[in-house]
Amino acid sequence: MLVLSRQRDETIMIGDEVEITVVDIRGEKVRLGITAPPHVPVHRKEVYEAIKREKQAAAAATGEQPKVESLANRKHGDNGGR
Figure 1: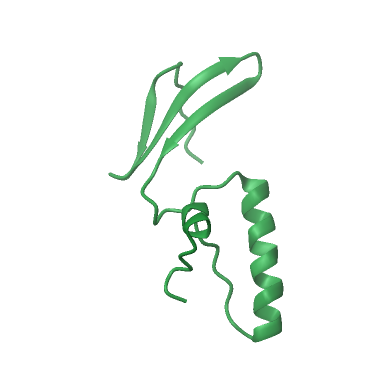
Figure 2 (figure 1 turned 135 degrees about the horizontal axis):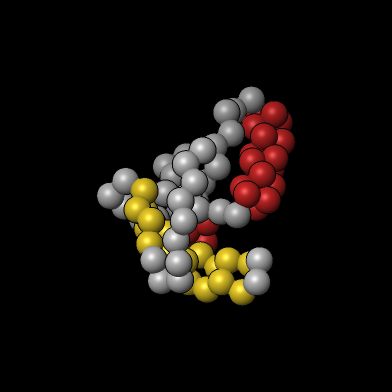
């Protein structure tokens, strides 16, 4: 795990497409802003895990391999070509 220190309004780049900016710090809570293209799924871990469980249950019923899609795709009704 890479651990970085950042202050408010400072940004971390992941590759060329993903920016993570420290938006606010209040006590022990940090607010992050994430800019990523629509094809890159971005979720809080608990949401990701819930989606993953949903996909696994559906895949078990149909015999397909589950894949977690981005919220942007779910919102716009695009199912990634499936």
